[in-house]
Amino acid sequence: MSIIDKILGKPLSLRARKSQELSILTGVPALGLDALSSTAYGPEAALAILLPAGVFGLHHFFAISLLVVVVLLSLYFSYMQTTAAYPNGGGAYVVASDNLGKKYGLGAAISLILDYLLNVTVGISAGVGAIVSAIPALHPYTLTLCLVILLMLTLINLRGIRESGTLFVIPVIYFYSVHINYSAYWIRASLDKWWTSTTCA
Picture: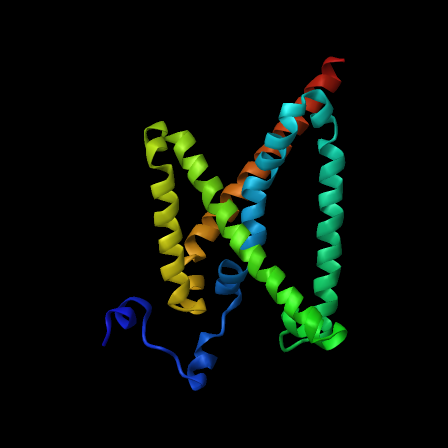
């Protein structure tokens, strides 16, 4: 067995593809991290762009948030239609090729590749930025941390989609729990503040 096979595992035959099917528990960590990670660094990235504009920039934050919600709703209904039309699975390439032609299917595939590259780039840089802000002593090693995390993600994903989904289950569950608890805390704090201001008035 070669070193590559030891690191990545043996190549799978077409018959073994059935064993790579994902459950609901492992499907979200393997395929849904794009949307999940955006909620982690998206608002901060928006504020980083708008804050230099001062009050004028923050004044448009709510309107921009509404536009983002509109885009998300359009994606939701689009995915609903795609799921109904392709119950056995159909990615962007298949859907675009069947309905618009192969040229548009290739365009959709290229767009997805660019999206994945940008998602990994922004996600790693935002994550390392958060770590460095919490531990300033690591600031000189920012680039090294980014490259190490990129190497780890590459090796994990090259082992197979089932293995990557299984490894990412615990971090995703932890992310969900923190996200839900923080959102609940923010809603409660906002309601308490509103109730206090109402009763005092």
